[in-house]
Image (cartoon, rainbow, N blue to C red; front, top):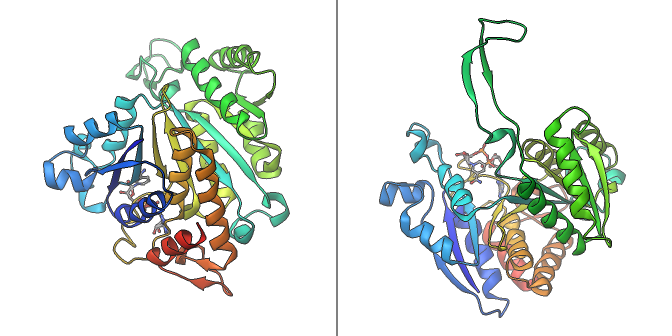
Length: 355
Ligand code: NAD
């Protein structure tokens, strides 16, 4: 098993270091190689995703990614900004499936803005299609309208489109993920209004026939947005398109209330994946040693589960994280009175002890 380790900028280096220690402690035969990405790579090599970094990522079974970005790069031309590294990796590795679990840890139940009884025990997985939909559909642009309500007026337009193979492959990811969980998939669409999403519903239903052991239901996106805050525990796996997934995955993430706890995975057709915390490089706290490394450590667990087929060690890491929370250890972002405040290094060390 070979992993490309790309810590990136800001707190990226601090939190990835802790995840690497955890992986090393597992006694698995994992080869890890580190490379620069984002602003750090721009500084050293003049590009946020240097050829050597991309080559390493392509050759690896998985990429463990920290975060990129810093205010000092905000005035660079778009192609050289640190964030372009993520888009470049997605494109070059063909990462089309974004998996974001939203898990409510019992000890952090008060961090949510929802009532404890609504989210206690929450464990859902949002799967977002990442490379299609209205975000990438052509044609798009600005023009002078020749028809519509205001002919002759300036207008802008985008194209929503999905092909059968694009829908089939994301549906397979959802059904297969459900098999590792509670075997329920909710496909979210807008089939009542959009042709693209009636097609989406038809194709997901067809793919579902190949998974008779997984229960499939369909929900309109407006209702899904409502149900996520009304009764989120009714969901197991939610699969949806790029734009609806963009919105719903942030909504679901915030159900748990703590950004430092949220891992994510982006997968391609051969299960190669990029694993990263859902948060950014947090330049405001970089170098202070107070960042929460748990989202990155949990991303490493997802990497073991989804790209390396190592379910048992993945569960060991997740159990270790639960155990340190039960011990009352908290980084500053999840601290509450009555718990013990620890640094990034101390949190990493506590996870190692729990392992
Ligand atoms: P951010 O997620 O970096 O930070 C938002 C807030 O959450 C900050 O107050 C930060 O201190 C806090 N925070 C985030 N992660 C934390 C952690 N692990 N522990 C404790 N506190 C944490 O978002 P932002 O401030 O909007 O963006 C900062 C930079 O990160 C920007 O350059 C942005 O482009 C970049 N960014 C990168 C990614 C990525 O690499 N995937 C994602 C989002 C933002």
